[in-house]
Image 1 (spheres, one colour):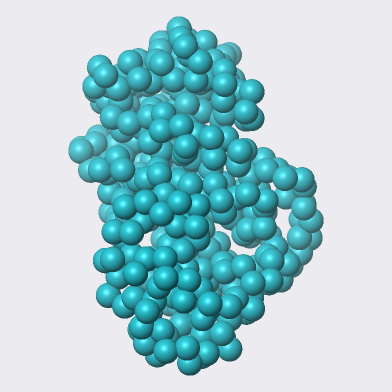
Image 2 (cartoon, rainbow, N blue to C red):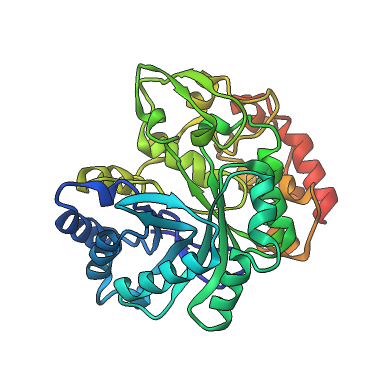
Length: 374
């Protein structure tokens, strides 16, 4: 499992984490959770997103995490509560604090790594959760008390991602990144802002709520699953796989880790198959083209252009360019300077352009990078 920086938190996360929404709903939840968590940890998964705060759900994860706590990064949600056995969202600071303390107790831990202000639906809700005396203030207090190491926010709205990343109130942002929102207006700008500002970007819903895995079917993908915009209808190619979905998500701007949800060991094995997959198995370029969810000339970082005769990692260099276009920071410059092969070493041979499925003017990009960074 490759490790990545979770923004500027100082935490190192496996590039694949785990969502737990579906795993907690199985008939034999405790046995399933323990088996899945054990195998996940054994294979290098260390980031677990704990969306719910049901007592039994938390007890089961407390058992599963026992003996592993120091190796794990746990994200728990402020605002996720339970009433009569059903989930409900709350912005009550008193309720959130009570639920949080119960969460610590049932998980058998003194702290969580990410106190995540949950499901901020739109800009109105963003203002609500960040005003004086809000859930954000509670998260800060918990951090000051050592009960939370970092503060995060989760949202399905790209405008909230942009605002939160620029605010420097949050160190981690959880947001959908999947092929269905590849062409969503302002998405790439928001992701680039996260990268530029050093925000840990946790990509949820890499399968768009499972819709992207419904091969040979025409499906509707609603804004909740695609991260904004309007509902789209897509014909899912027969060649779509979990590996290609994960490869796409992990290649996008600023992504630190992705948290696919699984409900059993079989689905976990499908996710873990990404780790040892070949370049051919990871190649998602034809999938994006089949959806027509792209703009001509837009790089989707698929690396179909490689290998470069000069040894340049074209996808990575282009990601840095797209990030820097919104503001060149010292962090972005440092990441470029760490590259073994710089854009200035491009010989303009044109081999990359002949391979690109999306008509990207790669040579112009390399010239632009060299001019910007060197």
